[in-house]
Structures are given as C-alpha cells and as structure tokens.
Length: 336
Image 1 (cartoon, rainbow, N blue to C red):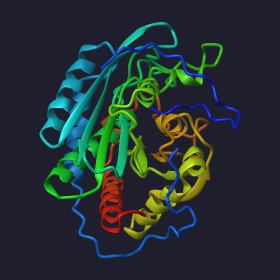
Image 2 (cartoon, helix red, strand yellow; image 1 turned 180 degrees about the vertical axis):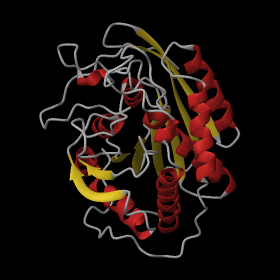
Image 3 (tube, rainbow, N blue to C red; image 1 turned 90 degrees about the vertical axis):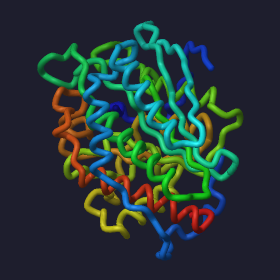
C-alpha cells in the first residue's frame, strides 16, 4: 500500500512495536547528477514475467497477515528467490497492529554478492490491505492488492532472476517487507501514522545483517497502473535528492519520461521514510501519484478496483528497465 497521510515537518513520532525474531550521505553530494551516457551492457527487463509474478501473488488471494493466502504466498516467494539469490534471509516476527492484534509476519531478504560492502537496497511490501476502507462497497473485506503491493514485488522478482543470469559486481539486496498495509483506518481516532510499515520499522531496528548499510535504496510502491505517473515525492527529495535525480534522469534518457515526471509532490508515510530516518540509508520511492483524486493516489487505492486490471505491462517495463539501467550503470561507474 501506501499511506494517505502526508508528512508534516515536525513528524518524528516514537515507534512502538513488539517483535521477536530471528546516516549515510551521498559520497559526492556536490557532484553533477546528470547521468553519464556511457554504453553499459544492460539486460532487457521482461515485463511478461513481471506481470506473471504479479498475477501469481494475486491468485493466492489477499495476502493479509495471519491468513492462509499470506503463508502460501510467502512460502512461494522464498522458494523462488532461493533459486536465484546467493543468500535468502527470512526474518520472522510478531508485530502488534494499531488495534492490539498480533500479526505473524515475515520480511524476506534476497542478497546478491554478499561480500561486497557497496550495496543497493531494492524494496517493496508484499502484504495487502485487510479492508477496502476507501471503497463504497464491501468496505470490511480485504483487497486483491494487485498494484498496491504485488506489482512492486513482481518487478523485483524479475530483477532477481535477471541478476542471477547477468553478472553484476555491486551488492544487491531485494527486501520484501511485511505488515506495511495494516495501518489504522481514517475513521479511527486518534490518528496513528506509525501504524503503517510495521515490518519496515522492525527491520530498521533489527536489520538482517548487523550494521547493514547500503549506498542508496529504491522503494517500489504501486508501480503497475496503466499510464502511471511517478513524481518526485517529498521524503525522497529531502533525504536522497542526488539519487532521485539520478534515477529520474536515467528513466527520461531511456524514453520513460511519460511515467517519470519532474513534478514535486508532498512527502508521504511509506517504507522509505523509516529507512531514511532510522537506518540513515538514502532511499527514494517510485510511487504512483496524481492530482486527480483527493488522496493523491490512484482511484483504485484501497478499493476492490485494485485488481489485475490495474496492472499494465508497459508500466512494469518502464520501472523494471529503469531499475536495471540504474544498477548496471552504477556498477560500471562504481557510483553515481
């Protein structure tokens, strides 16, 4: 998911999570971040595969914590990633929801080139919203979460397959975060913005590798909608501006400017906020933002319209190919 609450500049609330389980700044902040148009061998992103991986998740049913669908989908993703990654970490934890419910959760981390300290973190959440609170019907029923959750994971699973087949020296961590979408509904008081991103908050305080750091990170959230528009979101601009510009320049250079807009939009509560603020890893958020709805998200957001009709192969291609160019160009240049 992604949260409808906008971030105020004074928002630095304490985190309260019960769990049991298993600042880094850019090196050259003054550097011109216009991408160097070098001929770098870059694999082709297969949007058909990413679409299939997205649909596979949806076919399990809503991936709500403590459900059979959630367990089955998690097991499938772990088995899939073990085929391609050098190491897969499974972070089991019990997280407390805003309503006191204990959420059996799993963060899943697939790592490539584990001995290289120079790393890129790629993240998405894999759980789904337990209720359609932005809908007008069946508001208490869980949503499919095809775009909000599954699309980002689908792109990253295809990235994992490609990384195994096409050598890259940089360390890459694909981080599938759980319990992101169990956030407090708007009609429950008092507001509790930190009720979202529970798996991320736990991972930030208990990283899969002690002292984990990455050069930068990219979060994918709602990256499959037809004609999606990805804006320069406020938290990304605040904490990771050089990397935001770097990725956006690459996207435009590769012909994906219709998706990657230079519009600046307000900061939002999403997984990257906690990764920036707790771990100090500069992370940007590639997320569909629009001025056409009161929430700033697509009309499908947190409704039953968020089904496979909200996932388009062209959008998956734009995001996936941009990520691949980012990874392989960074690797060739040993930095941005």
